Length: 306
Image (cartoon, rainbow, N blue to C red; front, top):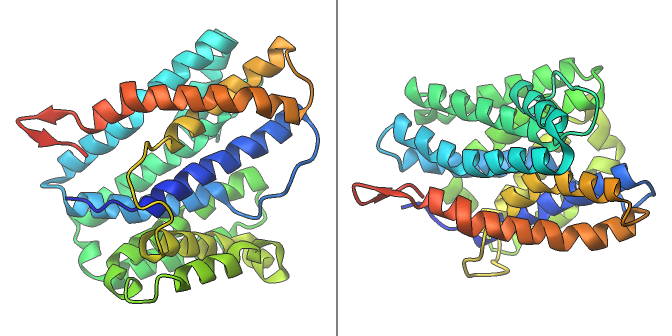
């Protein structure tokens, strides 16, 4: 049985909202508050922790892979259909291309370009299955080696443009999450306020000169470390279960933003946010209760795929 981490669920929702917010201001114009958090690498850090726990509790890698498919595919499919319905067939094609190539191919025109990260998350899951299969997770040394190599690669290629460099930041974050799971017993021994203090101290670190070293890759290590540690070992803010809307917010927000901007209903980012937020939250809630949750808890032979 997997553990439930209330703070990690909350952080995923907050990170999805950060991405939503940044995209509204990027597409609708204007300048909003700069969020000093690498949201997508932090997502991967959380995933690195949770999916290692998931495969550890799975009877086989096939069972783990099926759980991942059931978590990803329903809302992904719905987001592509939504993109088609709101923006047209060309937007659907562009969204599929961005998802399938991890944004290495980036067609012109409107599309759900947020899907780029899902491709690399799936690559990370595949790598986890391979490392699990060869026994690498039985010795933390090999995961430390993977972390160091991923940092070196990202630093060596720091000359790449930001939209390509961010891809290389995902893998150090993922291995940080893995290592926090491996050392979870040690990480849980601290006072529950200490991880929160670390998170507050590291929140702004990305904007300092130290955060810019090696092309910024160290931020993709430090921030996921602080977020995952506070999520699994910090004092719980909301110690009850609640709907996990994070994935829905992430995959549905761009088609809604583009549709609102195309309609001419609003002008500027503030009005766009005012209209988009309730629509995206409603879509995410419907998606959770009608698609995602039923898929996650689908039972076969009496066994849950949660």
